[in-house]
Length: 498
Image (cartoon, rainbow, N blue to C red):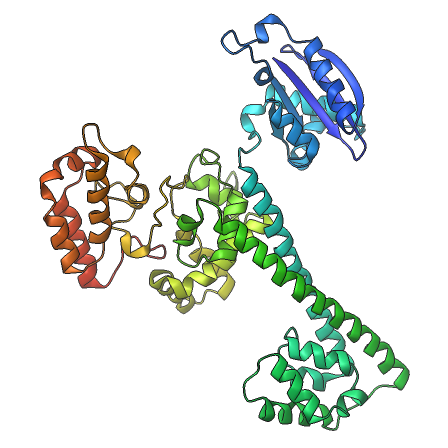
């Protein structure tokens, strides 16, 4: 095998090629683009042997492992398309590896390429290769991140606007409690200082409120006009003029951001709606088209990417870290995480409070114990994502009312089997696919406490024996479980249940 370290820059790449024994075979500085990539292929081909060729397929690229400190860009896409094993490495981890080769602190591009080649040669088992996400999810992730960043930028400019108004025009904060609203931005754009605001007529204020589709515009216009004309302390005219220019600038920025956020939101929703996993993602309590798009884009659609649910928590930063040494043991929050996914899961937990009775009950329990709002949400979002590490392959969404039992070491139907129950590939040998789908549909309907659905399931008992052999469960157990949950008012599979 060949191991390649690629230290990239904006216009060039420093390359080092090593063999199995760690001996340096080649070193070069290649330009960015087609010419540099062609030369890289030539360097690799010069040092491949007959042993590196797959005797069945004649393929050699899988015997080339490349370490690079990024996972995006045309260069990386070309490496993946060529079939090389690409390992995107965290720059912080690479910096720690560099200290193994010298304590002086010296650094160079050639030295970094050598370190990257050493990492993929010796320690690639401790790192993850490039995720096999589809191009659709990669594009969705780019748009969703820009949309999320635009919302963060709007919040920053909104806080700056609020700070400026508080210092020289506090009456505006009283008149416009929602500064980001269209009517507030329009009126502040016309009158960014106290003098001009006091001259605003009631008809202009009413027209702005009507364009923003505000109810009872006449009464609200009267309240706003009274707040803007109320006596207040004033600054020097020169200082007020400077503040007015600042306010007008922030208002224009906020108006532009509002327009772009709405446009990006439509693109995100459209891209998410076309993805085959969209119905499954939105079946989780609290996830809609925008938040679901963020969660799907950040987690990716490579169903083999995560070994278990713990790996998903670590990637999202919701699982804590432990520092233990001797008798000292500290549990801390995980700050080395995907910030976009961490924000999405926090919002997910907040939205789940209204969509999941179990999540709401658990959150209220934490709040009564004295836990703060954000700390309670952080704890609530742990059970909110207790789902299998791989999404079911079936298009039928998994609703809260469809779940029969929590996922534990019992022998009842669980959310993992229910999510993909209707797919014909899970039909046992010798069972017709149509009969399999009919029974699966009946089981999903039987998860609700409606008596007619349970009677419909009982009518299909002649083909239940193969289900008992396949999932080691019985129809009577499932029906008794549904009946008990219906009597107690609980849904044991609810994402917030404890």
